[in-house]
Length: 266
Image (tube, rainbow, N blue to C red; front, side):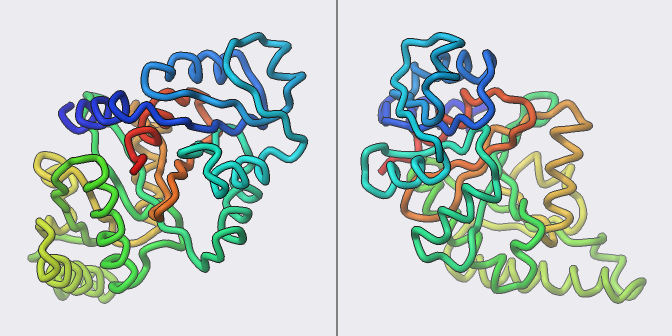
């Protein structure tokens, strides 16, 4: 639990101003935002009438186009960080890319196993981290976020098989080779890293950042853990200077995502 404890401590210290996107408004959404006030000054961005109908003392910034408004507030510095909340992923992330002129978004997800072990996972988008260079770049960008949190990053690299499986299948061989290349390049950059082959159960014992073989397998790990395995997804920061934490609209509880956004304030 030390990873979450470190993030909590940093969030309380920063107590940043965090905007939460409110597309579909619910009691659970509002109450989780209120519960996050121990970590941040939370601002709700969305339809003021719908939010007020539920009732809250939190600040509300009204907008009929909350994805655009949330990004505008972030870019103009009127909030220190943003959490997507229940806004559309397509609209909000597209707006973020356009506004910052980004060709690609890299994200890392803060997850927690059913027995309470937190770790970061990447890639979590199916189109992310699908080459050696992409994975190395993702890890280097993530290292900066770990520095913001004041946490020592320990990277665990995964592949599609055990080391002794080499030669059994061309696809497995490719993932084994790529994992070794990524490990070498990341180690050369001064980051603590270890290649665990396919043994994610060993990686979770030592690493606090796990790199899946590609975006599809990373997305499946995330979905299996969170939606089937009794684990938790606490949000996925976009790896950039501005603080933006992506979230799933499934679940509807955003306390940890707001905490994470507050902790990442520079």
